[in-house]
Image (cartoon, rainbow, N blue to C red):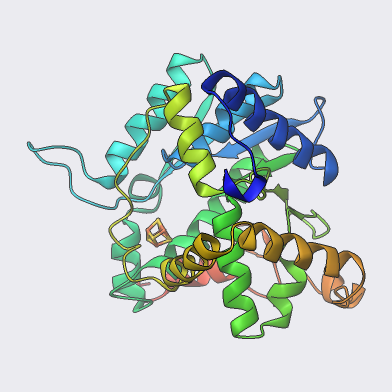
Length: 301
Ligand code: SF4
């Protein structure tokens, strides 16, 4: 790990990664051993490794898998979503852990690409529909299940790419909100945290490999050509030439935030939240929330 000027053997590496994750949990006051935690698992290396680490650290942690209905399963093999679900189930069974599963096609009658098609929201790339749906479902399951905190497997590469995008486009609202913890200071919103925010993607891939965690190798077919991938490639080039650039970029941003570089959200903005009359979740405008409006759009009454 050139960025840390550190080289470890397998045994020490498998100790080092959970130690780093625990440090981030403590530093950002993410949760305690008394909390009930829900981790969103996609079947990929980051979320399954995170579940493994939290379980090894002795936290009370259940999983949530959201089936997006992406990719067709056939005699030749499983499609992207079915294979991801298989990996999540396999991990849960192996460690006798509790996994909630929500199939979007079964619960809402349509897959993510079909919703994108019907609503004309990203026919080529259904990512905005996917993101909105996942946020809605994750919050709903966490609330209904009485979990104190929702945990996602965003790693440093994800966070640095988002920060790069928000900086390149100067999106102040996103720059204020981005961070390892999103507080539950809105009615009906569950606290969200990212314990892997200081771990490089390569470090997590190495952890999964050395720990023998089976995960879905294939990426979602819609990820290709995305802005996030483009920004990650640029940051990887920078990291190759100047090891530590990524973590420095992210941590100095967090430090600048702590030093008051960005004004916090006004209290009034938080108070102006309403409850969606259809699903009961918090929304910024009166009336139905963005998810319920999207689900109703283009449907016959
Ligand atoms: Fe969803 Fe887009 Fe990610 Fe695929 S690439 S899982 S469609 S957000």
